[in-house]
Length: 221
Image (cartoon, rainbow, N blue to C red; front, top):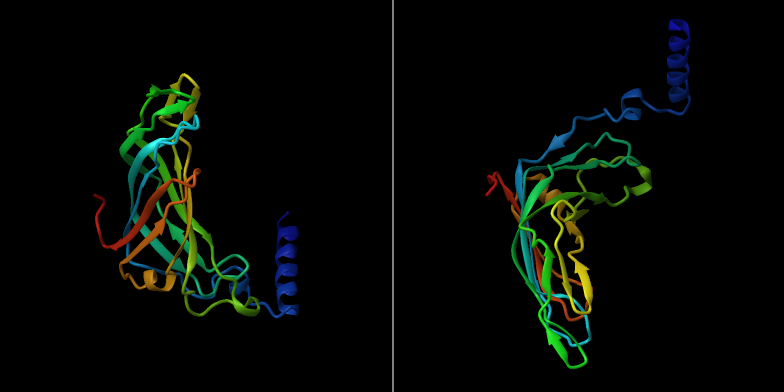
C-alpha cells in the first residue's frame, strides 16, 4: 500500500511538470490569503403594501433587522481562478422582526380583519454569503482583489413560522432572499460601506428599502 501511494504521488507531480504547473499553485497555496479587518454587517428591510380589495392576504407593514458579527472578506491571489479567489465568512445570525401588520382582506363587499393562527414571529435565522465573483481574464489568477463581488442574503422563518387566516383562506410569512453587489476591493481595505436598494415584493404595490451596512471594527449591537 505504501509503494502504491508513493507511485500515485509521483504520477501527480509528473503530470503537473508536463503541463507546467507548480505544485503549490495547483493546491492553491501560491500566495498567502489576505483578510480584511472584522466587520459588523447590518441588514435591514422596511416595506409597506397598501390594502387592495381583490381577496389577497398581504402584509400592510413589515420590517426586520439582522446583525452579523464578526464578518471578514478574504482574498487569495494564488488560488486557482476556477475555484475563486474571493471568500467571505459570516456566522448564522438571529434577526429581529421590528414591525408586522396585516392588511384587511376583502372580496366583493365583505371586508374584514385576518387573524394570526401561529405567531407572529419575533426572531428568525438568517445567513449571508458570497454568491459570485467576476471571472479573471484568460483564466489567470488575480494579483489584486476584484472591485466588486455578488453577495446573497436569505432568511429562514421556518423555526418560528408566522401564519394567518381569514374567511377567504390562509397565508404564511415567506422567506426573503436578496442578491446584491458589494465593493469587495474597498471592503478588503477595512473601509465602511452602506448600500441601499429598492425592495421588490410579490405585488407591484409593495414599496420598501433594503439597507446593508458594513461597519469596520464595530461590535454586535
